[in-house]
Length: 606
Image (tube, rainbow, N blue to C red; front, side, top):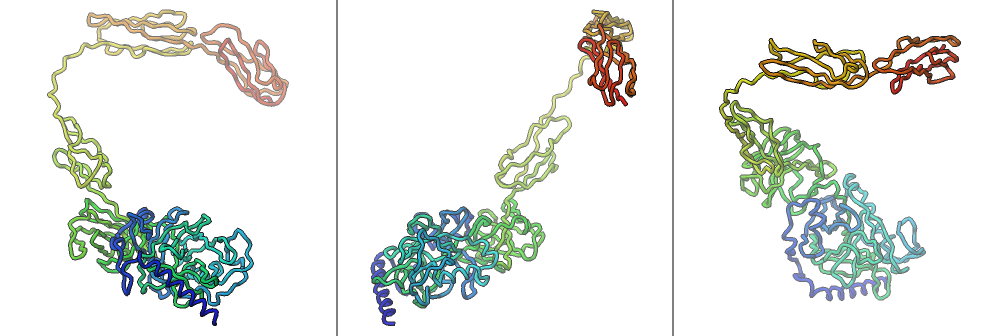
């Protein structure tokens, strides 16, 4: 008992010296503390990106001070947390620091040296065997934080899923060096000669690298109660004390000191958060808090809301357990969002003033579930675009997102006029607009001169097979017209006076058609290409093994000798005259060639 009192006395002396050293830099110490200017500028609405970039307790220029509501404290009340900033080691990870104690507890009831245990999960570069009584990794307060992080009376199952483990480094007073712990709830790190504590992931071998939190910006709502840090601190060489902190500064305390608060930090995953608002997530209208409530992306599961030209809000597909929320810089308004409802701007009253427009307002549908998460769907801002014809007839009405383009309807028509376009540009819609079709009057038609009837022919180019025929005919032929035909090469293609062309041999010829009518002579030419071909004229599909059959072929429009072959000589053979002999069962092609022309036939030998 005498040693414990000596330690506590030394700790009190240390506490006094630390506080005296910090007093010149702290204004307004006493029974109450003025809220900082940064805290007075709390914003009522923040996007996820703003939460990660614009808020902290670092005291840096341009940074805002703000709180969010998350989980419960030991009394069952909603817990407020300061936004400390984006965790440096993760994407979409927001570090929060408790604005009020979750509960009070001793750091360690009996702070005596003890055997190190691997189950604490401390990551060392060395292999310690003993640790001091102020060792954070094996402390009772860390065990309490672990239990709280999985306790539904503090955090619902859905909230626990959003909490990320954070790797922090802490000094080992007995063994020297640092060790790493990974927890969802953890205590901050501090230095005895600094008005700043550190939060967030720490990867470097220096506990000063983390998110800074200026204690003079920390305004506790519980009489500025001392809270534990995880930093061990030796008082007069004794190893049972640690650092504690409050807005006034840092002090040392023995680990079994009673009445000291647990004020932890945590990291939450913002990947499913779309924004945060001071609008209340509870029943009632015109409700607003100082703290932000996070809104998680509900997609289309809550229905949809559309703001039309900043004048009305249309709600579709909603239900009785959901709310329509409107927020501007003066406050918020809430109303139950039924399945189908339309809310004009003048229906909404905020701070006793009726709205005249939804411009500069945030509008959304939300639902808070039993898991204490508020899920939301943001309203789309659209304008009505009406397309009209020249006579005022509505051609089409569209709802278009602000800043986007409308789609032109089907081009209208007007007798005696030509459509020339629309009277307004609709590439970027900024409000309700009516767009009217524009026309130009067509010139009066003139009587056309009667054209001279000119004859023509139906073919100017054609391919035919040798031995085949085709017919030329004259178009626009007068009753008394005289027509004649002639060929450039009758050995290739012949033509009679009726205009019938017959292919004779492979090659190309020109057929000339001469038409005499109306005192004029017209000449037309048709290019005819005659193609030759071979054809097997005598065939047999099936031939028995050992039997013979003579195939015959005929050439059309080509000259030369026939050359007979087979595709597989093991199955059959064929003579120069086309006589096929079946040798072996199977399928084989009989092929006849004449120059570049050939024909084939498949035979089955059985």
